[in-house]
Every structure is written in C-alpha cells, then in structure tokens.
Amino acid sequence: MKANIKFITLSIITALSAFNANAFPSGTGNTVNQSFSKAKKIMQHDIYTTPLLMKTLYCHADFNARKQITLPSGFVNDVWKKRAHRWEAEHITPAESFGRTFSEWRDGSPECVSSNGKHYKGRRCANKASAEYRYMQSDLWNLAPAIGSVNAAHSNYRWSMLPDVKSRFGSCDFRYDRKDRRAQPPVDSRGIIGRTELYMAYAYPRYKLSSAQRKLFEAWNKQVPVNQWECTRAYKIYHIQGNKNPFVMNQCQSLGLFHS
Image 1: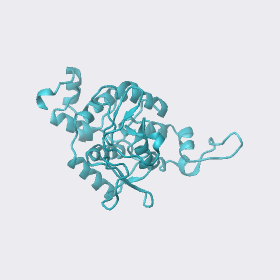
Image 2: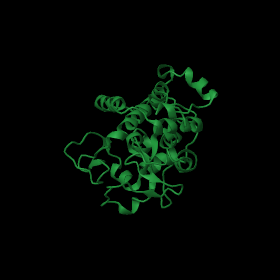
Image 3: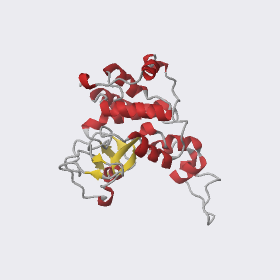
Image 4: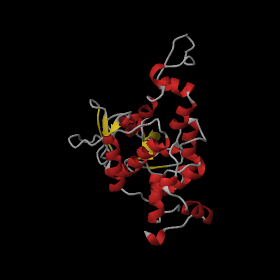
C-alpha cells in the first residue's frame, strides 16, 4: 500500500505538520453550513465522488453519482425494502443523541407554532429555532453514506455490543435491538464510529459521553485504525468545512495515508 500512497499538496502538508490534537481547541465544530439539505448535496457532489469513496460506511456497497446502490454479495434485506437501493445521509452520532441537549427539542419554543396554532417540539423545532442545532445536524464529519435500510435500522439507537443478536442483513453484520434501542455496527466501521463520537463530544461541549460510552469508542478507535477511505474523506471535509477532526487526522498523518 505504501507504494501507492500519493501525497497531498505542499500547502496542506505544511498546514498539517504543526497539527496536534492537544493543541486543537475543543468546541471547534461546524461553523460553515447550517443546512442539512445543503450538507447532503455537498456529500453527493463534492465528497463521495471517486471510486475509492463511492462506498457506503456500513456494508461497503458501491453506488453511483445518482446515489443508486449496488448491493453487496450476500446482502439480505427484509425490512425497509424500498430504502435499500439508494444511499442516505447517516448521522453516525444520531441527531436525537445531541438534539435532546437543546431545550427546543425537549420543550419547544415560542417560534415553534404550526399554521393551525399548535405548538410543537422535537427535531422540527430544534431545526427551526436553534442555529447551533442546525450546525451540529449538518456537520460533515458526522455524516456518511449508508444503505437506506441500514440507516433506518440504526434509527436513533445508541451504539453498543450485541453478541446475542443476529444480523438481519445477511453478509452485512449490522445488528440492532428494538427493545433496548441499541445497535452494533460491523467490525470494520467501528473505528470511524468511535472517532466520530469522540469528535462530536470534543467539538460540541454540550454533547456528553458517559464513561462507558467513551471507553467503548476509545476501544473501537484503537482496534480499527483509519484506512485510505477515511483519510481521503477527512481531507475533503477539512477543505470544505474548514475544521479538523483530530482523532482521524492525527492517525492519517502518522500512517502516511494522505489524500489520493
């Protein structure tokens, strides 16, 4: 693999040479785009546009420029069948997980009144009344393409280990438990999930991880290092959104997995 590594431009190397996670201030999240709709368009047209990157986060399904998916061999889909043929923008950290830190989500807001005079709350209200929520919801570091039915299976469930649960997706070992509202991702996607969760807590101080969650995500981060897909994605996001995920970029730099 080392022989195939292509180095990024000198300007990027210079910028990254002084990059240190400990020096990167917490609370530095997305401040560029607060439109989830725009974020999805950026994903389609500016990030996941090359053969290397045109694969879903879970299951590694190939897709084309129109977001149409070629399901991998052995993939089984008996739920949300209509959502299995296009990729969707998956919130790796579920929107509800950070959304409930906003009073607009929990309690509503004077701004959140429907045309018939009824007050509403939840995601719809947070999106309307809180710019901070909109920035978090649209953070490209927390968004990745996923088979629609797998995205639906993840729902807003917290990440966990489910050794006694079987996957309903065949060769794609994505497991979920509706009763306990937990989900277990395939092994090879656990690293990026761990690094994303750690980033969200790092970049947005209002989002807190429990001690058990942090230990799980730190373990996943160590067990499944970055790969070329994740590093190429990282440098694209960095140039578009302008902020860094130190949990990803430090590893990419140390392993020599630059943009290709």
